[in-house]
Length: 222
Image (cartoon, rainbow, N blue to C red; front, side, top):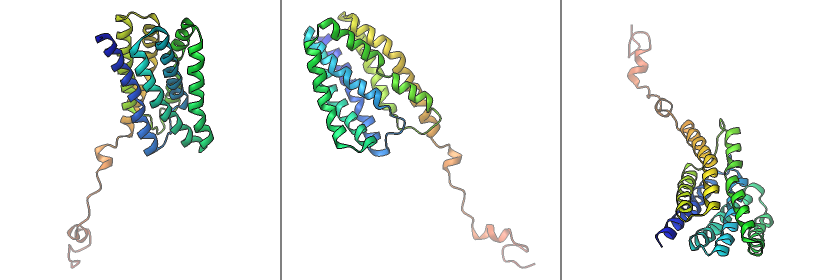
């Protein structure tokens, strides 16, 4: 029971990562944010939900089912922001339902392999985009990727204790990319913070200061 709670906590942290990024996208825009990465998060949650149903892992079922909802909302919002198309946004839940249905019909081993491949690729599009645009403004959420890294560490522990080779492999490898995204996001955030000298407004000139600069003193008399 304690082990399942660990897996559930890991899954909750991962699905919670969508909320800071959603807030950032709605408030500031989606510049620098990879729809590809968050779409893979969504597909991965769908596949791992099916995998949990195949093997009877309660933590994998509940946490990833929640991830389907959370990541689905984020991906739908990003698609809407980028394309402005309601039709494309509505295709998101349709595609997810089709993916879960296909995964339920597939052999367990194949679903596990698909989950591993998707999990390993989670952060790759965002890592590539963050590196290419590392000197440009970005709305990549530091909080979101900190939650992703923490969740994956807990999933790795869950896989080791269970034990489950698929969960171990996917999180051990994926942590390299998600850690890279977090580092780049932190560096970008630090560059965007204004320095004290830049943030402080210049001192206002007083009448005495102006007068002191005129010939003859503050009253303009020789």
